[in-house]
Length: 251
Image (tube, rainbow, N blue to C red; front, side, top):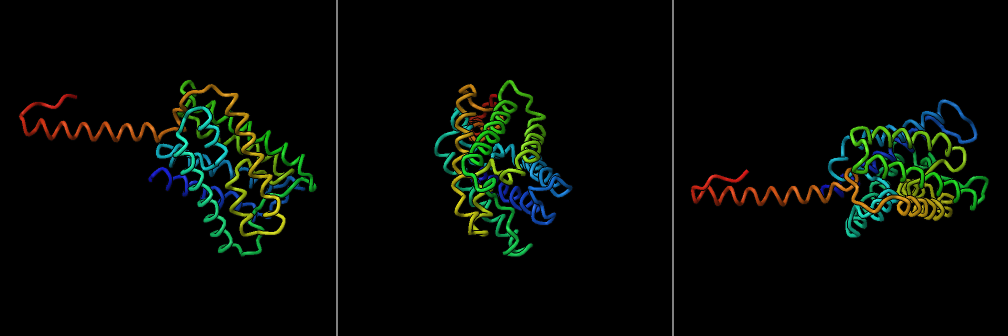
């Protein structure tokens, strides 16, 4: 349950601070200014903060596309995948609700939009950006990766992706991040939501298939955590038994 709660909180923080910064600064994808760059940094820094806060609990996916990539590489079970996705969508919705309360229900919520009304271009942009993002994540968190700096590398990659993508779609690369704001913004944001769900998932499939099929050390902590808990319980049982029998515990 802790890992699902961690995903809920992490996605809430991502939406609140990422989309919230876009709303507060008045980010407009048509203009590259301080608001544009500030929004890109906010999304990236939110990921860095959460990676080092909840990464040891859930792996800090906070994104159904990332979870799908991890699932395809064998880093998590299908049951955990479903639980993660539910928690992520719930967290994104809660984050958007808090944003609406703070900034107004007509704030726009930093919702995504089609590039010039073009579904094909918008889908292509989101799929390519998500594939790049998920490939980076799977690479830097692999057993051969440099896990100490994984959170920083992932956050900086998300900044780069937003610097490029905000102009086109506002940058989603995350179905949950798109769903939360669209749920409250309604209108075109809700009508076009399917693009920002389908495209990131398509990009994640490409990234997952291109990555080696191995358990991901940083993004699949749930298995290790469960194993650690089982080992701890066995150790305590043996310790109690040995205390009763007078046999020293094996360490």
